[in-house]
Image 1 (cartoon, rainbow, N blue to C red):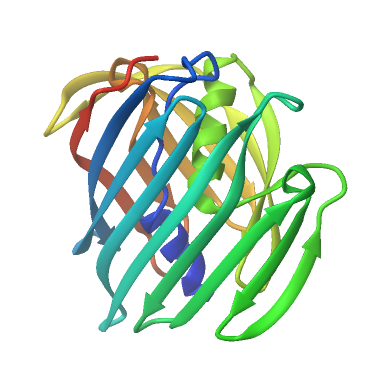
Image 2 (cartoon, one colour; image 1 turned 90 degrees about the horizontal axis):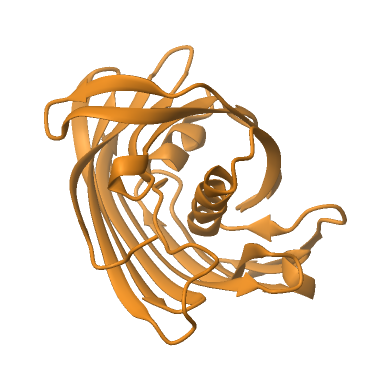
Length: 236
């Protein structure tokens, strides 16, 4: 059972401006999520995105209990728009995890995101992805949103994980209507992720394509992330 895959969806959320954002504009998106494992509320997550045109600083913090182990997660990431590739790429990120799978991870990206230099608790490694860029979990989520805005129905993305490169495939499904206790009736876009782990994401165009639900399809434990609060001064 790869519990770290469950923890991935605990820090996965969508936000950010579109590629057409004015380079001088600035805005902030603040999102809060409730975390559930096998139907039991186990923690909360908060994410703040500070946008300055085509760049962003993203800070995520969460606390959860995984199999009775208290776990705290924090990450700061620097994201920018590539005019060459017309994609969001990660410049660098710093991640700290205490409790379950504790680590201090620092990563810098070069060559348009195709190379990463990783430092985990002082142990250094380098990874290269020839075909598509490597991203952290925050930039990964922003690029998913960008692909939805562009109307893509299927695509691939790579994430820089703590122990290597994790490839994902995505399939966008037809819009549907779903009722949420917090938000009422919303039109949502389901996006199915397969590869290193299977997750279904629901995005709400009415909330600037914000992630409103992420569901991890585990064999033993089932992870669920639901949007609890959302504030934005950004516009698509």
